[in-house]
Length: 163
Image (cartoon, rainbow, N blue to C red; front, side, top):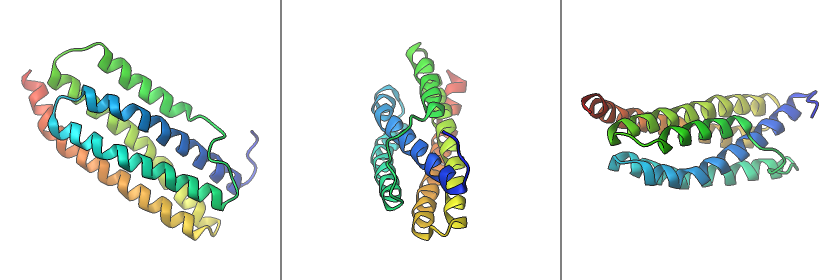
């Protein structure tokens, strides 16, 4: 698809993010199951609902813009999730695996933080104030998720070092 306007870029990025959120939502139950640390597991369980809500809000934004939410696949997220799955599928020490899961989860979160920051700015520039507000809310939730992962990592990484 040839992208010639900022609006077309916004729509393309929103569709990409929608795909990313759906992919993450499918992967999160696996992360819950493979995480050993109870706090990490609880964080992923909470994020299932958050991710579902993010996808729903993206659908609302796209529908208000008269666009379909399902016209592309986020290849970047596909790759990040594949890396995470490959890391965990090999097995290993529980604490070390949890540290690796956190690292993968933070890569995913940082990917989304960058994307949501960009689309929020595009929406602001295009006068899509309602979309910008929603996208900023999701961005702040992603930043909070990253902070939670940082807190869990402080404990898990020390345990991984001792393993």
